Amino acid sequence: MSAPGLRGTGLAGLSPEREREVLDLVRPVQDYPSPGVTFRDITPLLADPVAFRDVITALAERVGDEIDLVAGMEARGFLVGSPLASHLGVGFVPVRKAGKLPPPTQAITYDLEYGTATIELRAGTLTPGARVLLVDDVLATGGTAAAGAQLVERCGGEVVALAFLLEIDGLGGRERLGGRSVDALLRTGS
Image (cartoon, rainbow, N blue to C red; front, top):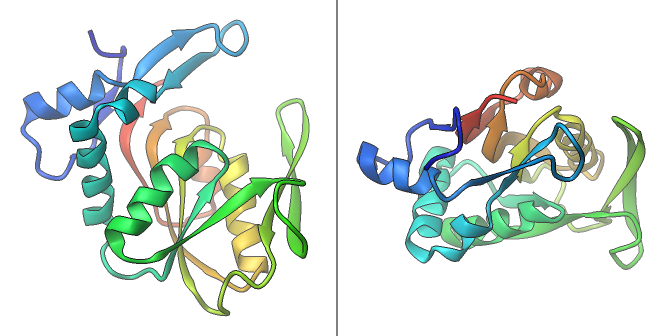
């Protein structure tokens, strides 16, 4: 049984039946990590080699050839971004939580619902003007993605688009990204 309200936005020309099979691999987990939150578990999707390939192919076809690098947000953005970069024949750079990369780094601190977080990018990793696709697994409120985009730009890159496996509608994430090009393969309500 598929997650309630989960729908695709066109998975690389898959038949509707195959698209539904891929969607069914995203498992909703109620009240995790806290009461009232529905966590979207992509582990079954990652474990299915054919579905995972379908997702990476779909993302690659939507991106085109306008990028030099893929930047993946810690941690599940690494799981989608690394194979996507390989498929596209471009490099991959990790955007990590503070203290996870060797110095020198550039950092940005941003607000969370309850507190703040800091992310870092290794200084000198981006060639000035590098065209970057920023990737993460889920777009919810957009705070982490907005901070990631600002950090890439602070380090000299140009964020040409942001791509997500799943977008949760109704949380304002897309709006918070200030008119940037945003794409998500799957969408669901909050």
